[in-house]
Amino acid sequence: MDASPTPAAAPPTPGPRPVAGPPPTPGSPPAPVFPPAPVPASRLRRIATPAAVMAVVVGAFGYVGSVDPNEPGHYPVCPLLRFTGIYCPGCGGLRSAHAVAHGDIAAALGSNALAVAGYAVFAALWVLWTVRAFAGRPLRIDLKPLHWWGIGAVLLIFTVVRNLPFGSALAP
Image 1 (cartoon, helix red, strand yellow):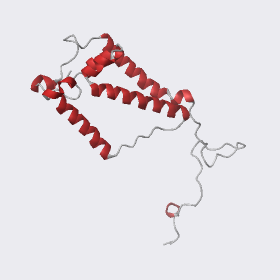
Image 2: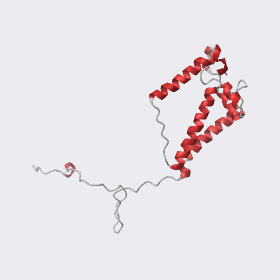
Image 3: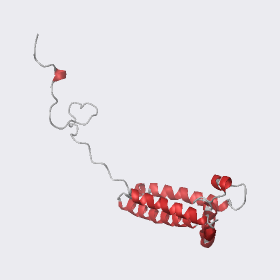
Image 4: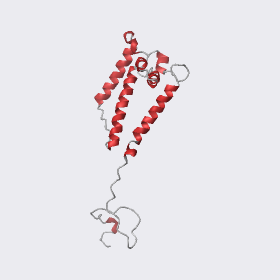
């Protein structure tokens, strides 16, 4: 028996591997060892996603602005309110969006003040996202567990207070 190694058992050769592609033809330049650097996206392409998100939001607010949630039968009733009589943190959100779409901020705050604060936070984050995308930098929002617990606590406190007699101003 021959003890020489077989080609399949030979160790790999060190060094860079050529890029996969069609085999070179005689007289053609050799294949590049490293792939070419990625071409940076144009500014228009970088802001396409924030623009699409804003288009969806504007469409949603346009729909809610044209179909009045104050008239019964257009939107489903909140199941928590229907079965328990308790206002959830989102109760009044559609009426609030309808009021914002019509420019009535006072009515929007009366329907759901937390939703109006959410609209403002979304608008600020969207502007930041668009500016950073235009500059070619990613938007990184690193929320730690403490932040999520804080958001949950605000939602819980808002829900409890709006369902108590002294917090009836927060009820829709």
